[in-house]
Amino acid sequence: MQITRRAGLGLLAASAVAPLKARGLGSDITVGALLSLTGDWSTLGIASKALLEIAVGEINAWFESTGTPGRVSLRVEDTKLIPANAVNSFKTLVGAGAKLIIGPQSSAEAAAILPLLDDNGAIAISQGSTAGTLSLPGDSLFRFVPDDGAEGVALAAALDTTLVNVAVPVWRADPGNRGVAIATRRSFTALGGTMTAGVEYAAEKANFAEVVKQIAAQVASVSNGDNSVAVQLSSFDEIVDLFKAASAVDALGKVKWFGSDGVALSVPLASDAQAAAFAMKVGYSAPTLLRTESAQPKWQPLVDAVKKSTGIDADAFALAAYDACWCGVLARLLSGGNYQPTWKAFLPQSAETFHGATGWGRLNANGDRAFGDFEFWGLKTPSGGGAPKWTPVATYDGGVYRGLGLSSISAG
Image (cartoon, rainbow, N blue to C red; front, side, top):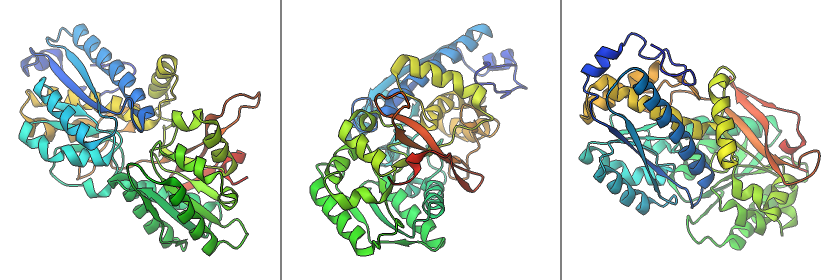
């Protein structure tokens, strides 16, 4: 049985239409989504929404072609990346009958809804949460991206390979970004690098003039003028305001800057002339999950479709939302009903044999993606001129960091 050419699955190949009907698919399935469409990290939210709409359309077409009764509907709530909003939106979704939730994007939101999942018989599959503190066995939160330990290894390799000896970590005070900072410190020091005490800033209403002053002081305390110092910033779209403040400090424009997954391909950063100019000056690059070559026949048409409809280049975090929708529904087919313990028991099984837009979907014992490599993106002015564009500048693949030969991977 072929599910869809794009999903390319071979998944559940031993199943036939009759057994699927026998599993109780006579009723519709509501998929809920907790996405940031108008708040921080809206680049991921908008791309995820577009990909979920494609996934639901494909699933319904498959159901129709196989004569399977029941259809999937999608209901999206805009959380603005605010945990309290995620809780309220979650309640709205389960009240509308959604037992499968895609998202939320951030670890702070995921932590907020985690206690509500079992009480409401729901499963959540996040495409953006990476906090190691949420890597827990037996819970009902699954994550189709690796936890922050993997990203920390990739960032440490980037620092080490680009001859950084000392890094100044800076992070937004939320579980995900704090986790990236902790993981990067652990991995970079294991490679022999040095991390300063670092700077944490408030998740809301941060005073970036003061934050930048603290960053500059730590850079000055370790700088020796040999380009071996870098700033590693774990953030969301508030990076625009931080970079504007940093652009006024000469010393901060002379060191390398590395980012985190919450900013890779950010539309707000690319769209702000002052912040984008600073990003290019310091060779800023940010990692996100690698879009693998083996899965390109699956992800390329999806990326092209999202680019056409939204103007956004969908990264692998967004593609993980598409894969999560497919796997969640396939697990529902296997489970034969909406009983949450059975449904969630089948989810790792469906992921194990799923080769989708983000490659093989295997989950670890804690329900997180078992593995993953990364690609680093930086802003670059097109050769013909015009607004800065996000461009792949390096990969971390198979344990090796490789620059792609673009000037934007090192400080200007």
